[in-house]
Length: 528
View 1 (cartoon, helix red, strand yellow):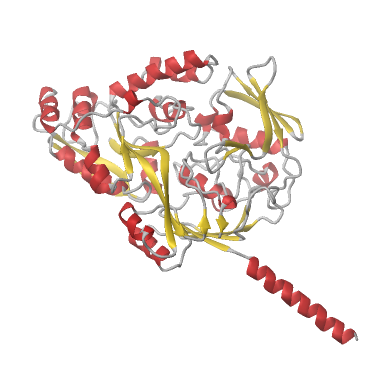
View 2 (cartoon, rainbow, N blue to C red; view 1 turned 90 degrees about the vertical axis):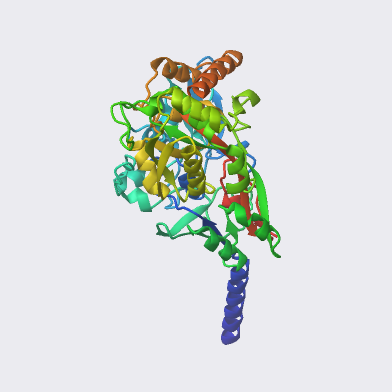
């Protein structure tokens, strides 16, 4: 009898094991570039957020449609009678992946860590004067002046376990510019839906479902394992999808969209992205380090900058380079972001004769040489856009030598002011133009302008940009914002090219919406 009972128990156990295995679903996800670090506060980078949103969580989250939804905070409000204090009520019964309880102390630690001088996210929290734990599930964020858009700024500020950070000597963020190695660069401990299992930088990251996740029952959570792989080569990425080796390709090469769409068992989902692709010009240095012109700086002359603007044929880039997957623009503020207008979006007409005349008028009829720093694995056809731009500028005498590198090597050239002419893409996570103004247009200092390598300093403009954060009168703020955006457009220190259009390739049984920040949240993924 005992023997028979043991056999029945064993059979039941085997049956349960088989059933569990059948229910387990691996989601194989491919991107063109890896997150260069797992430290959540070191860089203001969509590529880092894309991976870390699976593992860590912010207080407030934007869902698949870009709508605000609660994450580790269940509610938030400006404190009655105190416009410089925001009160956040935290989600109870949440644990980190190592079992530590999530409390207000972790929020205080994380926000202050993100304000550290080493943090790439410090600009996002400029204006915050203090973060205080009122009790285990209540935090007050105090600001030097009213900050009506504070909540908008928090969607990518991940919350870390303060005890874990202290135990592993990562209380301060990684010094990313100087490639510091810390425990947080390759290890994680979040509250998110997925737990890090293994990490091979620039190759493969494996995650498993967090069985203790607070969101069970609220999100599909159908993927029990996530294999996040990096395939830099566009043809190889597509081949992996066509062969069935992967389930989802986030960075679809535009030239392969129709092929994938017409392939049995596959589909392509498309949608607009709130990301502008542009070039930045070092107009503030006495001379350009990479140019044959000595003793003066051609980019300091607005006639040269305006000539470059009209020499770039955005429609040709849209048609030939992007296969239609772009929207030519004259601003760094994408449609759908507060501050965008049709007038702002208008770009100069392609006009080589007029551009040549401007070059001659500025004293550069014979042109000059300059190096263009460009990423080759970050944005859709980034290197090809740079190659096309070099050709267009050659028509007005500007001889461009192209230096294309992976984003991990490209970004430090901007952060360290080691470039005269560079490509960058920017998506305002707050869905407000001030996000772009703070990081791109404001001159560089300890808090602002981390990605502004123009070396131009305009204290009056800086003050007006900073004032946007504390203006609570919507009409006044919108008017001030419009004036600033017109001024920076007229200055032409940056040359907008286009806004990206997103295309995600996937198996037909994968159900996921294209998110306007180009963020995939695996917890929302369903399988038909």
